[in-house]
Image (cartoon, rainbow, N blue to C red; front, side, top):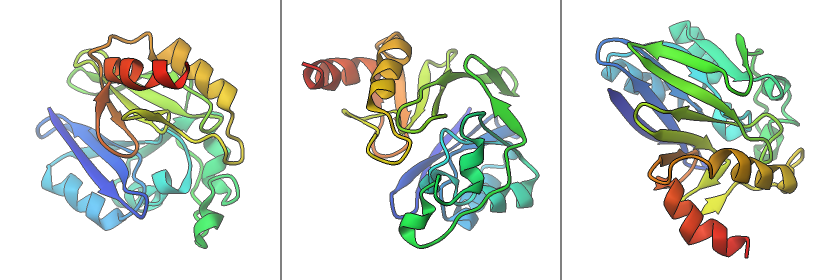
Length: 210
């Protein structure tokens, strides 16, 4: 399997390129530096078929349209997040003085959907609102890892003080959807270093929640 993390943009967003050798692949959260990401895809010899967005804040969508046009890949996002792609106020790009306006997604996702990629590689969609209304995580059960977007990080969680953020929903998402995963599940977040469910739970969450 091919798995590459490519940090991009001013917020060092982790974009993930995942696929099979000489087969189909995906990119998750192409936040910026579109040419750099396309070069990585080409170097890895991946046929990019899907662009999956964990949530539509500007630092996760800045390279979406370039990659869609250059590769023909379809764009997937949760149904509650689709309008954020098209609206600089909702995707917060107005904060950086650069309006990002994308077309709508090709496929709208819901909780529990399974995204097939190539040769048995697939991801379960876990709906985790809170940081944003339509935030999702992507769980690969076979290899036991989670792409967590901005839901959880290495000993931290996503902010909820932005417009449309909701702390109560984020807490519910984490407790009801994330902490039920095996403790040895590796977590690859939208920013920063990787962690595990066990480390997050035992060295951050239980202390933070008191």
